[in-house]
Image (cartoon, rainbow, N blue to C red; front, side, top):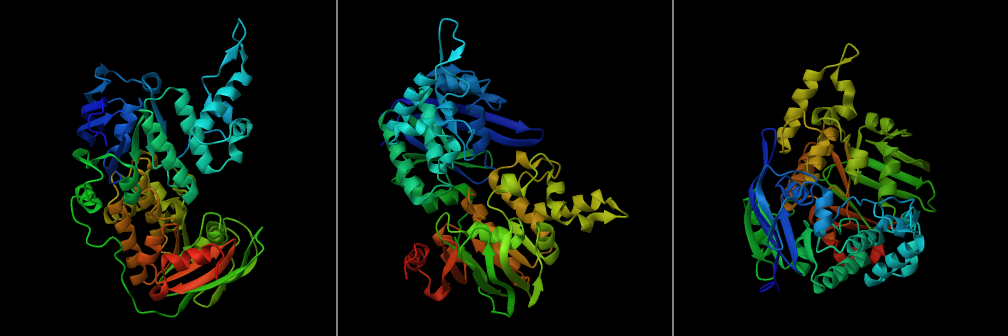
Length: 502
């Protein structure tokens, strides 16, 4: 409950434009001490821009910001830090090869001696350990290299860093996107402890179930406008979605059924390098195959080996009954295989290149004209996909870095559509994108199957697997443990197979 709590932050009539693209159109946001205030909106609604203004990464065009009742001018991240504003991004801002305590005090190292020229490692270790213990961790991990820790613990290190800043407001951007179930529970516990101490949390998430669980109030943005601020506990997630997308979503999982055709894709005794097991499966035209399993089960490694991104020790791959030799991603592309990686920023896009170049990148042969690239043809092709996939903003000369996560994902998909591939491997295709964009991705999968493509989807989201797949392959410790038809698939069956049960 947040009634009666003191206002910490009030952002009033915030506006921000990039050239002719009006991103924020007079947004208000108020956050109270000790509350979890959720920001919800489609990718491109303005959430990230609003947060970057609050943290000093962007300068607002107009509007006012009040902190503890007083007007403030946040011109840089240092200004935000001095106020007590800390941010934990989805892509963690850490240095893996430094010790945990060195990451926590990076840029604010404690020094000793009269000249204050030597670093006080002992004091930094001690304080880092104290903050880690506050978060339910052992103080001893302060001396470990950060890269030795799992993603969940690395996020807790980022929270510990925020606590050393005496943060009054911590912004968490999709904090559970890469966490296991146990790590998610640990994060929820930490959030509760922080709010009990009076620290406010701005929580950005597309997971409606977790919003319902930990949120106090929710502010919904759409197309650069604040639509409404609502209490979480007494309002319905379906209503949030309706406000967020400006329409009702008749089907969360718009699965279509098609006539099952002949076998189109087969993996035979494929053994990923370093694995003790080999994997075999088939996929038919007219079906969407899901691959489920716990984090570390070997799903992504299997997809990367099929695509030639990682070496395989043995095994054969067949398309339409004909064996294809794949030693590299180029071989896979030439064979008609597309791989939509879960890591779109590092593996799916050239962030500092424009949309038209990114979309044409995987099929440059299609744009060759007497050994030169037909830039006009590439632009026209890119414009077509930008329109069809509703990529926003729709300016093909924008760099991919300037788009929201969901729109970046659409650019990656457009890149592979441009290759006219036969087999599409989707690895966590809806991670970090909003409900409306998810439905668009699902409909695109239906369209691919209808047009004669093979679709294989790796996902950690069991409702998504059950909602969209005709057949579920389950992996555990590098091997397939179940092949379950849609009519028999349940969360219980999948989880049993994912944990090695029979």
